[in-house]
Image: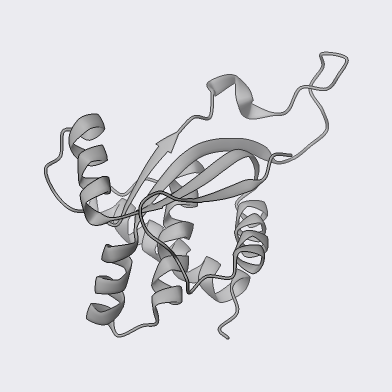
Length: 159
């Protein structure tokens, strides 16, 4: 199993405990029936994420998170050393999840929550996209937000 990696692109995230957060995110993945085959969180500024949004998605707006899913269709189950499928019940997922730290802080103020709670929500949101959740329609958006709440309540403790 490959780990979850955190990169600070052009900013610092001083309010996150990396090892605790990584453990919680791995728990979220397991609850979703997934396992990491390489997930990287890239923390960045609004401007950096806006450039990514423009270049890759042709969107000219600020956003809090963008997920790039690198999971291949053939990655339904890990392959064993002998070439056969393993008995793992977890689907491997991989991708890059870009998060604007400025958006996190602004949204935390707006929704009157702690920075870390908003960051945890957005990190889970990215994992949900890797697990197959969408948010393009009102019905999908409602479902993904309900799953965020469930994962926050069961996999992250408030400290």
